[in-house]
Length: 117
Image 1 (cartoon, rainbow, N blue to C red):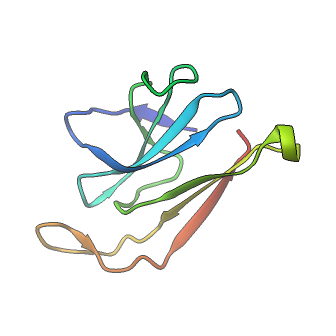
Image 2 (cartoon, rainbow, N blue to C red; image 1 turned 90 degrees about the horizontal axis):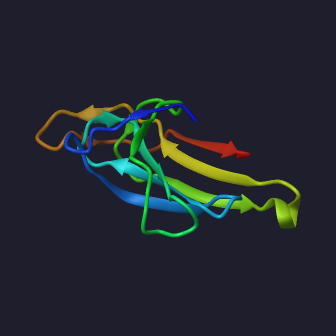
Image 3 (cartoon, rainbow, N blue to C red; image 1 turned 180 degrees about the horizontal axis):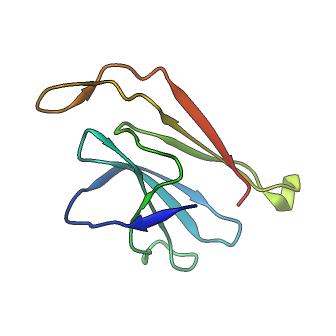
């Protein structure tokens, strides 16, 4: 996953999704909460607890996206299904209606990514 440092004072994150990774840590994927077009924001727990996290970063390998909710779910676990698979979905909509909130009119162009890590 390609990421870059995220400046917390520039934007917030919300509509977060968590998934447990194979090593027992947790991965958080969140919506960029500032409107317009942006990257998803990611962070990983330090150890298998939820009290310490890595510095949030912009996830660059998924491209810019509408700042709407995304999905994240574990499809399978290697201990049970012989493969570790995580699904992530997001809107590819780049149609923004000009205005104070940069609202997105369409959410019908979706992509689902599958990760084996």
